[in-house]
Image 1 (cartoon, helix red, strand yellow):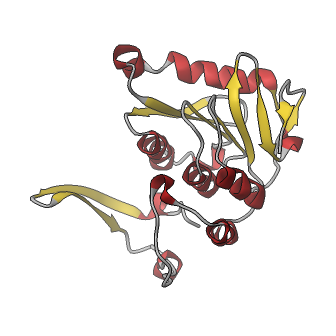
Image 2 (cartoon, helix red, strand yellow; image 1 turned 120 degrees about the vertical axis):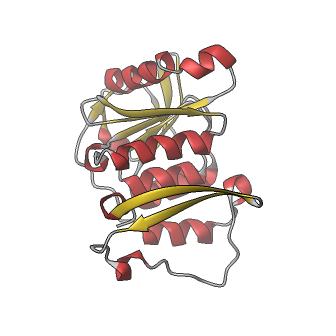
Image 3 (tube, rainbow, N blue to C red; image 1 turned 90 degrees about the vertical axis):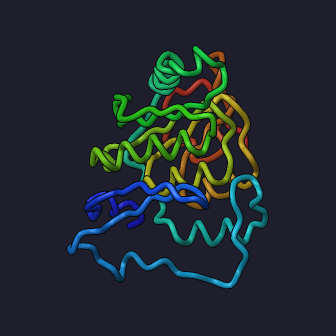
Length: 212
């Protein structure tokens, strides 16, 4: 699937060019080149918060395998993950200007954590660490410090985690996609409460509001 690339990666090289930065990825001979082909269409592409249209949610939902409900999680576990992310934000404590993303296993053990001035970059870096350490199959929970957008859900869905949570708001497209791929989406996770927007069945004894 989308994240088999880590096993097929042979080398990464960085090249600074006059037109910008470039990173080249070299795959080994075992790579399934047919599986690596990305279907290209004629529709326009969007980035960051510029995405609009439920048809894009349908396209993305169809391209990602629905996430299985393998485990149940309780409120204490989720809040402990959030607390760990907050405590480990060393750059934020110094600057007050970074976002963070933490990825945890089903027991709440930390697999990776990254900070960045950009919320998308923070999540990408955390996912990259999980892939390079070959722990993608263990990833179950992602906790962010930022607002949850459509792209955040897309990244979490491709990794295959069951829960994506954050202390801030979620967008309507994020909720639509989370429902389509069977991801448990939690927003406003703060002060011992929060909102579950999709697949609440994964949460046992969770002291949150069920808001669709």
